[in-house]
Length: 640
Image (cartoon, rainbow, N blue to C red; front, side, top):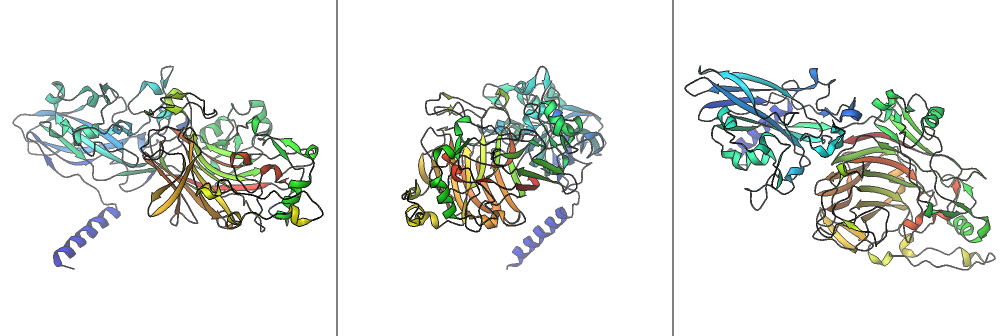
């Protein structure tokens, strides 16, 4: 290594060690014609380099506030900078603080023309003073004494930072409808001669970020770092060299709230317990509520009248084939999947071990049931890396027979109201409704969005040679086992010990992505090929599937599942630990419309109707009712 290179490397390592040891980060000295600014620090009352975990107290009513009242005294960041008057007379200066989420954003300017704002940069989560009508704040008179004078102020990061009317309801600013994002936040200080503000040298849309010009909102980071504000006379723009990392750690042990829209107060009170109810204490503390599935009545099954412990009994494919073939039609049990008739009985929040247990209850003769169970988060967010540590129920037994469950971890729209619409689809629009056929109308924007992990025993749809597999029907001849116990095709048996990890984005069939396709087609990411499938151009979802060993995902003490939802891409990962995760699905905005509205996370164990999964080797109708409870546990959810 050449000496100069060695010196540079040592300098980099030394600089990095200063930051890692959390030494104070200071902005450099910047000089204008009339004044000098240095030592800008936006968070003097927060330890630099320390991650801030969102405070859930009060977040249901006001949304997340950064910092929380329990995290710093007064619940505001204290900002500080120093200014020196280098002019000829005492002067007042004006300053303004801006912040922006850097982890989940679009570039501020066009790549091809940096003088123009990126068309989606207005979607970035940025803000300034909580009251947007407050433009610049004056410093007070700074004398000409060749000394630096310390200026102090305060601010906090809140939801709906532009105070947009679409998030108001009956005069109330429902800041929770556009919650702050997780990830890294940057801070930008603008100090200017007060005469620039008095003489209206800055656009109204920069002074008040809630105002629009003829093309929309103006991102202040674009204006001051790339646009006209970059060269404004007697104006200093300083971007703080450090970042504030914000994460969310909703506590599974903080209780489960019962939503009144799902169960009446009378029903909730009958079965409530200390960690599950509609009581105000649980309303304020719980990060989760019991999820109640919508059961489509058209998905009725004609189920075999068999109750079995598939996972622990020696249930075989021969048993499956016999039960499938030799029960008469009148003996079958016509049901749909059900939901809990009473709350709090199948979901339990454990405050000691900080976990949630979900229980699909067993069935009894005459009380036939395949009951879905799950929980849903209560605080909506836009974008984030959602990582779930859980031990969900195994799906296959030692004979590789399926118990009928689908384990699902999925994001779903928080609301389909106008305040939560997705960005416009400008190529023939979205399909208007989640439920609806090919003749459904198309609209410019919709509120529905969904991103899924669905894990069950089914088949890949791509490559096309398994779409659908060619199964042999056999003959209903009880005397000759070879006539009715027919083997599966070789391509099915090749994945006999595997379940399918299905990764899906419900893009509502927006045709705008440049490489929008139907059928099967490859998507490349990190030297891997993921086969994407869409039934036809009006089908509302794009799916990729990865066969994985059931014993690995659900046979161990726990496993990690991650949905990495970014403005321009979605990445699905799984792994035995957080630092050993592998990609099992990838889509970007070239092939699918990435949602940008606010969503909630759901974790479920459910009995899917296999008519949704064409070509599956096993049918839900021919899978036994559960003889024992199926229990899944959720240990941790991190959003970062």
